Image 1: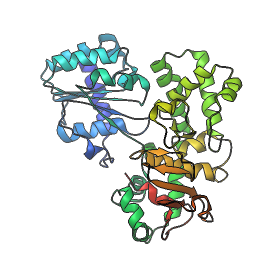
Image 2 (image 1 turned 90 degrees about the vertical axis):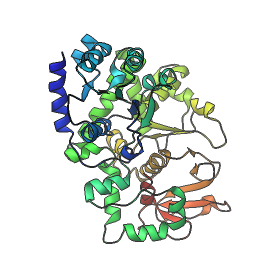
Image 3 (image 1 turned 180 degrees about the vertical axis):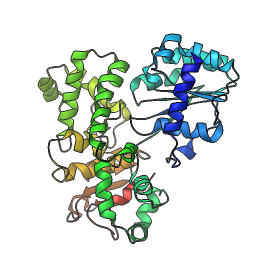
Length: 400
């Protein structure tokens, strides 16, 4: 058993040897005995784990990487694999795709209890199945969420230029100075257009021509594998879920009418609520509530956005140029919601952390819709540098 798993470990480790470390790497307390990295498919969780392996262990005798859905792991069980490996003197176990393992939380708790002196690092997709067990494991496991690439990270990986991550407050106060540095000797708007098209998922580095096809495969696997497994959905339910995602994708933006959706899909309102939640937990959509409402009102969101701009290009029937409005707002929500609370205000497009009102649009948009508001800003596309309360939209991609 171990020999076969070690062969797989060696193959994965050799494939995942990358020097660039994502924003989350230095935020993780790697000295913890048990931690979980979760996030949507394709965001780079496996790479993050392998980088830690290479930095701190670099030997299969010290640490072993396995995938929880591998036939050998499923056949023998996580507890048996951990027991066999740690008895050989291993110090750490890296378990990828743990959400695909039946009753994973029960066996993981057993491993953590028996081998409290070993390091256990797990990863899984952003599904409710993973988060549902958070309460049971909260005393043993620390959770870290990995998002896709920010525009700042894309510039580093694709263009080889580095900028520090900014706080929102620093950006609002110093955006003119920051934009002057960013656009210097750069076709920044061209770079930004490329990011919106293919820059969110790190796998663009493995081939831009195949990016859309790979993203389509990600969507299919999320729906037909991750969601199906995590929520015990049968095959007839999955095309309905896919149709709901298509409806959301082809709205600008999507303001949910549960009665109409229920009728269009031929399912009850209750199922519509569940399916919207499934899509959000799987990292395919972002649900925003109205400002001033508590989180318990999120069952019926005020607006629903696709999780990132690459999904717009993959799922819609029109070009990104024709979807400019939806693309701009999707980018803004995606980048801001990583570190901030984003809600829908009564005036303006978005309210950030309950204090900053933001209106998103093209270069010709004026302040009419935010007139008379304090702490109100315009985030405008197609401009390289702003002034006063007008900020280039691309700068909001520098926050992580």
